[in-house]
Image (cartoon, rainbow, N blue to C red; front, side, top):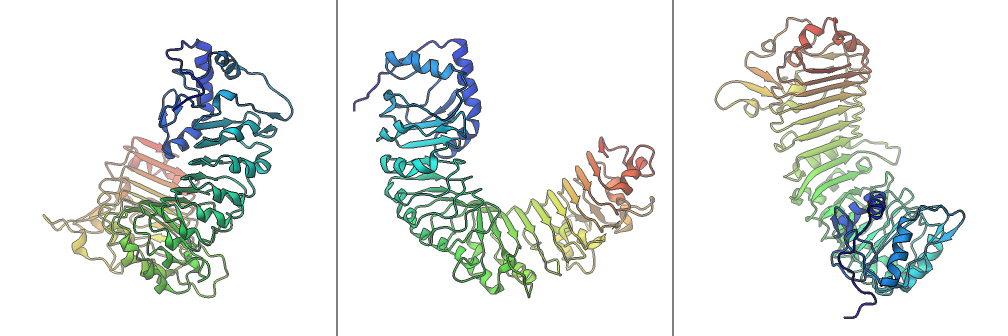
Length: 515
């Protein structure tokens, strides 16, 4: 193998050079995280490529690579702080022509032009562009045509409006990051990139659809599409090798994407959010997703948004259909925008540690979450119709469908509600007035049940924007484990817990109280 440049070892860098390199590293810190995800190695001095080729075009603090005649000129460029007005074209020196990995950082996003010399990097395998060069949309077709050896292409936040069809010629591509651009769709030619492992189009707010034939990318492992808007995801059922899918969007239309399209994605790991569940027309379709087979998922989000004016709301039936199908190893569950009348909740999932409920617009009573044996963090927000939180929430009410045996200690008859709960947040509960146990200062825990223990591990309680809430229950105030009590935008109970207020004697033992 031949190289067009020589290697210089142990080059002593002056202090100002080191400071300049540090400054550059700080500017590209965000890129460093992405490069690490794309299998580059992150080190303290900066970013290195996996294989440290003598032809690398990314400057390393520890040593400089390049011809002796170019070394001083490169260092001078790095140390330059001169501001240049008007459009400029960055220049990449000839010693980098055989580079395998290159990063281009734009100092002036609005006026800098993509350097034309980069087209001559015929052997380039990785290209990362940081910034929004003014010429990117015009230059992209030729750039792709000339860099046929690319394995990694990161063009995040580059102002791209259209991905050229000739991207399908980059048959070696494995990792593609087009996030934070203005693209509306991806060309069908991308479905010919059979070696692709990673595709990131997240935060592309104008993206409307994925290619219809995306299922041909049988090696694809990571797909990120989250952008706050609906994206047509037809063909995803063919991506059986997927390990990561941040969001799946349900269309409710057989011609676009149904929740049943998830049935073959049994290698998914980590987190998955299913959105637009409000548009599911047939609750039986949920069973086709075979969610119980997703054994490697640990975090699940269920968002019941709808893109239509629904004549019939199936949220309750859909959640009931999902309950027995829930992946077995889920420990974190978020349910948003649920419009069912009955507070259906999969309380049998014993491994749940984190639960977030947001905007359940029609329910009047919270589900019996106190029976979850492993729950550590609970957040309940924007329950517009909840006026009272009572024993049913603890799992102690006769109408809560509780199996007492599930909450009873094997060594005694003691019942423990929320046995491991450490953090509890309530927010945006505009109509909430009563929290059972909060009226009357002499009430005791045994008033509910002489053998009942409630929230014995609670460390933090936050109440915010609950303007009508009158008091906190004594089982919270008398807790010896509570370390942080935060009350904001809730004027009635704020007055109670200001120093000297009637609630102060019960809470003064809490180390940190924020009003």
